[in-house]
Length: 311
Image (cartoon, rainbow, N blue to C red; front, side, top):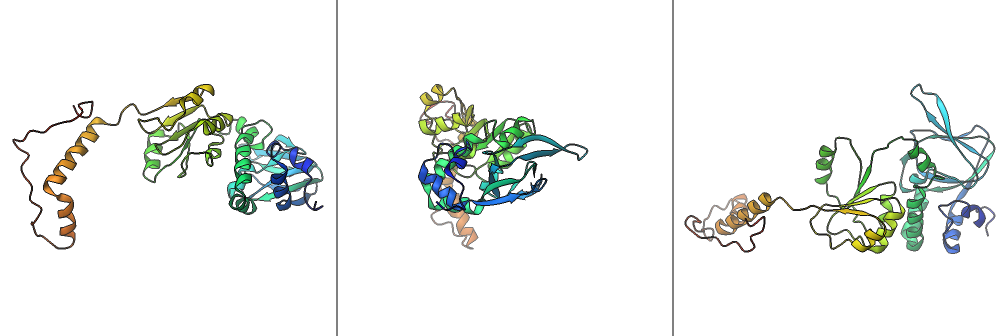
């Protein structure tokens, strides 16, 4: 083994890496690099952007938060096996605390750029590491979890999957800061469930997959509610939800008025060929050939299926 790499035992002291197999640990060891910090040296400052995570091999690090007066207060101490900056693996992330070495400290660093390469080149490691990371941030020995537990933001957090640009403003307008929102364009599935780390609710749509494996992972991260933005729920394993005590909510019905009015609009479009007329006019063609329809007045309309919409 390269002497410039952390030993397996060092990596396994961190809960994030504890259950990884030896090939996965070897990949990590080969891509992490060491850094030494003298006593009182600042590793990072609260509020600045960081793009690297570190694992402490030896020494201690103070976790400092600024109060309203700007004074730094020690809220925690990290030691061998502890991690810092976990969320920076996903990209430049604002540091949630100032970290200062209490003694001579040796850490192993994994940068976002290197981590992104691992995700692209080693799918098995990526999935295992993301799953472990999502669970790690929920545990008390995680720096992120410790800071969240101190009440920095106690709002219920909702992860929206398979979102579109027009959805976010609507939900934010209805929210009025009551809940914390995270929006993801990715669909929920086995490879993206880890994005829900730190959330208590996932809001999903018809193309998201919530099978037994995904439900189990969501439960392990502390998700308590699955909120469907649709009426159907055939993409959700309800038995798995019951086993893991996850509640499921769905849209009881789409707006019957909106759907009925849209059906009427389609009838008029087909009858008067307004879709074809629109394109002709844009091209400067004002011919009425092929566009004539008939009057609906006096006709009898048959409605097949007289549920709420049909009525």
